[in-house]
Figure 1 (cartoon, chains in turn cyan, purple):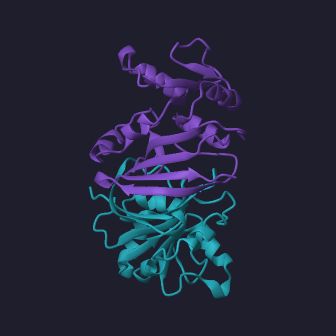
Figure 2 (cartoon, chains in turn brown, green; figure 1 turned 90 degrees about the vertical axis):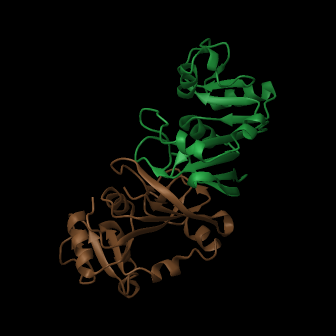
Length: 181
Length: 181
């Protein structure tokens, strides 16, 4: 697992009732208008408490697609967990090849509050014991197919409910803490 | 879809945070103790308002497995939606081959409040416009793999949140109504 973990890994993500984070082609047309109708989702408060971003190659490339002037991770250290992305892909990010080297990198940076994003990366860090909090914002629609948030995590991961809040437009935001073993 | 629908199809089901209704082998060891710790889940009130059960072959066979004296659907009409179960499989149930004949059967019975159970059957009836309410009781654990509640439903199904209640032991019960087209 993660001995001497030096940080808290946090997930903050929007899903459909059927557990998808994007359509098969990545689109969020089902999520964005419902998220906007929800009112304040607490995202700004959340991100204000984050020092480091951990994403996979997919989320990194999505961020690149926003364009040079729209890099979403300003003021954050960014780690990309990927076996394929070149080390020198982008000066704004550091590439790590596995969870152990990522954990060492986060420790060397002095990271304390780490935002973990992207389905595959979230599952990898859940498996590695590197996610401690999950804030899941559920919008009221079934989309039937898409990119799942969850999947195999190497065994049961018991959670403790910290809070559940009903936002606007039928959106529910729930925060769980991963039980310590 | 279902013209002149004569009934309300209702789902009442427990899931893990990652959306499973059973482990791959069907076991519910992760669900039952957490459900019991939740306190009153409203199941008895729910079932008291139901006149007809719709299940698939899998759920039917699970019910058979409880033994002759433990048939769980006493006092309910039971429809089994299955392409393979023989018509004369059990005198306590009526077998329907497709959603259209099921809808006709429910109409002929005068069914008004129909409990739809089992992942595959729930998805089939969602697709056919034969589910109007979903009460989802979420227990705080990730199990990683198992029998999913949701899957392809033939397009987006927008929902309206009716209620969300925090039960005991970190269990959340949420009721959605399927938006009418």
